[in-house]
Image (tube, rainbow, N blue to C red; front, side, top):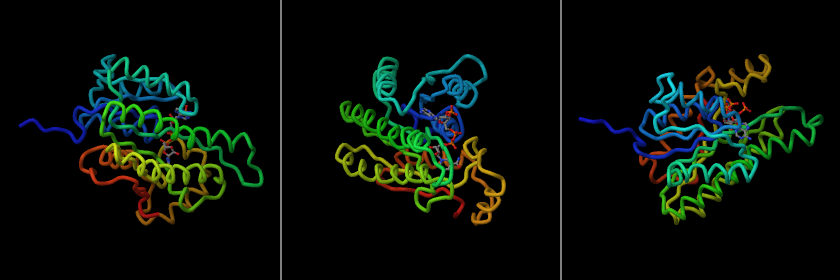
Length: 256
Ligand code: NAP
């Protein structure tokens, strides 16, 4: 008997796909049968995801139906160009959209520059808005019953030292998700957010060891999460297994 994956035959766009959670999402979605478009500011990293980390990957130049595309989520023109390139290549917009692109520019409130505040807001919050608006519009115009998954953060709920900009951007992502879910339900487009805790990816490399040790004491499971553990929830939310879930914000934190 041929076993079908959870998202077989679906087209999935993943932003921030060149690293961490985005890369793991490409891995798990492709394992479950999706065709994956890995989009990232860093095209080479996105291509590496496709070549080395998707189900078809053999380390060769064979990318199957998967593709890598360059994208700056904070730039409306770049987002429009991505949609055009996808329609050109696949004829239809993706049914699954994962917003994983994100940045940190940590500093104490009393020292945080306006530039670092703006850059975090532009990528994390405005970037999520631009991708959601552009691809939800394309989904509704093609009558696609899609699923959008936005990666927020647990610090959007509780705050964190040194992250006034980042925590505000991530709280914004949850509120935006809930509002979009209310608007898009009538088109059968679901929108959900995931709030990861401390996940072992390059983004936490800048967190001082002392802070990490302190944080780990607050995690009942006593360890960092693996990006794949977030990707499994992304894939669940992408699939029909979650067909009655929209507007949800799901913690993936080891209990933090
Ligand atoms: P990561 O390994 O740094 O991956 C983020 C990816 O997004 C990188 O490839 C990055 O490229 C890319 N990116 C940055 N700015 C972009 C832009 N303007 N347009 C397109 N791509 C861009 O971090 P991660 O841990 O996987 O984070 C993924 C998401 O999870 C983020 O939204 C993050 O805030 C969230 N999150 C992570 C954790 C955690 O503990 N890891 C916890 C909670 C939430 P460059 O490397 O070239 O900048």
